[in-house]
Amino acid sequence: MNCYCGSDEEFEDCCQPFISGIKKPATAEQLMRSRYSAYVNVEVAYLIKTTHPSTRKFHDPRAVENWATSCDWQKLEIISKTEGEAKDKKGTVEFKAHFLNEDNVPQIHHENSNFRKELGKWFFVDGKTF
Ligand SMILES: [Zn+2]
Image (cartoon, rainbow, N blue to C red):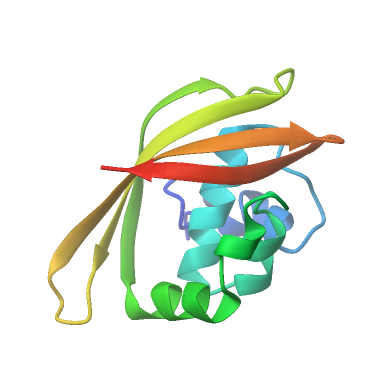
C-alpha cells in the first residue's frame, strides 16, 4: 500500500518511521506529510509533539483527536513550498487535504503552514487557511 501522504513509497518506508520516532523528518515537507498521515491514523501524540512549543497551547489534544476522527481523509495535495530543505531553518508548505465530512460531503482543507527547525528538529508553527 502506498503511503497515506500520497508518495510512491510504502507507509513503512515513508511516514511511519517519523510517526514512530525512529527517524526525524529532514525537510519541512516530510514533516508536513507525516503529520497528514498522523491525522489519518489519529496519532494525536505525534501531532502535538511536532507542533512548536510556542503554539502548542493552541492545540487541545481532544480537539485534535475529534477533528482527525470526524474527517474521512482522502488525499493530500502539495501545492507549493518555500525553503524547508535540510539546510534551512524555516519553510512553508501550502497544501490541500481532501476529506469527506460526517455527511460524506467532499471538503478541502487548504492551508499554508509555517515550519521551523530547532536543534535539528522540524516543527509545525502555525498556518493560514484559505
Ligand atoms: Zn508518507
